[in-house]
Image (cartoon, rainbow, N blue to C red; front, side):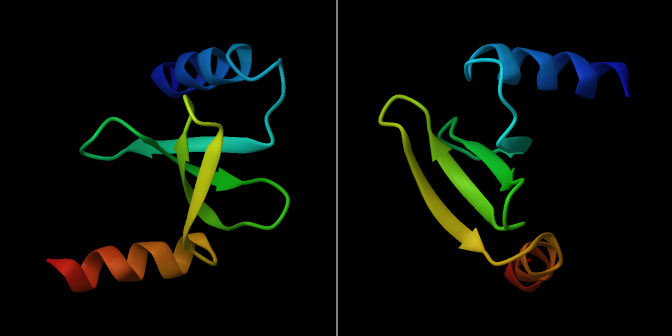
Length: 70
């Protein structure tokens, strides 16, 4: 839990002290997988470009899609 809190605080500090998104992982190219706090969608964040790509409509759908790829 402490590790998650530390990462979350770092993410918040890098985003103007806001948590509109919650980081939940990192994909192979170093982009951050986040959950949108407003609509629950799971998205891929490209911090340098300021862009987000929707991966799934919710966390359950995202987890199910990972199970199918194995």
